Image 1 (tube, rainbow, N blue to C red):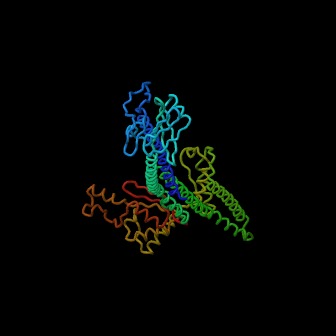
Image 2: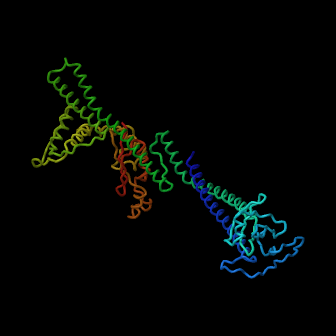
Image 3: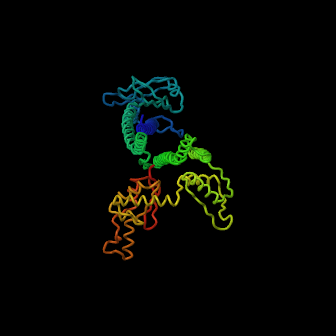
Length: 489
């Protein structure tokens, strides 16, 4: 059963219980009130009968004509009050001390008499109320003692029962309407409550099928539902972050393992021709293999630590930066075959820092992958310039993209010749032009700086750069937009 139906039925059950309790209380109260009213009316009528002792012990003077008299076709017996004096009773009879019963109303049913009634007629006693059944009809009977016997007045309970039957029907109808109304309101309320949950369910199923962890997750709804949506969003973002970390780990691993593996392959090929090597060359190759093997083991250990989030033991000690630089230079000499020198200037021990050597080893491992000599840098720059000239692409000024007639082509060329990262900056529009207008510059051109052919906002420039790489960080030093992007391998 769905949550919507459960809420609806639950409210219906609660309404039904409330209606049942209220209807039962109303029915019982009404029944008791009707019985009490009938009993009081019978007592009042009986108290005014001739010869009946009052609560104060006195007997009222006879004000009734007890002599025989014809009432229509009916001759009222002696000792019976007129039929109007016993209202609202529909039956009245006199019970003598010897047990003789005399009906006082024409065609009335005979009221049953038992031993207690006879005892009350033979000697005075308390008024007695009881319910009897005569020919299938219930009667309420009051018996009061009087001089020479007792009087019995009775009234049918049919009227009370008719009222209660009508009341039952009315209460049942009102209860049914109340329950249906509560269920209808419950359905509307449940729909309002469940809709955010259903949207969250659709979003979860979409993420499960598409594996798109960047999908938007709805967080609207009541407090608890909104909190659930925000928690789900936090979980999805954590999963997305974990996936990006895994992808970065694989990418970094492939990049960092490429250099030592290439060096090992080269040295192993040289060892295959060991007969052609001099002893010095042989020793150099073996030493290189040992160094690369050690570094490869170090990289694998680092990757395992990154994959398992193993914490570093922070044990700081004194580290000479000159020694660190020399280790980087030694790696560069071994891999490039070029002379790389490290010059240290300044006071003795001025290169001494107190830090964690394990972190220094990690930094050196990264630097060794990116180490490049000044000659290498010059050769790469010359190659880029030559390629740009050969392709007819204008050479970029320090801020390049806003000046190019083909900014997309220039961006893709930068990405092609780049190694791993791009750091780009452009004027942030329309803030840059607004600053020119405030300063009174280039008012005729609406603040546009001469030579600026392209204009980007922060969002549009990030979208442009994302076409060639993964945008890692976007900063906005006023009034510029600067982006760091990582290029695919």
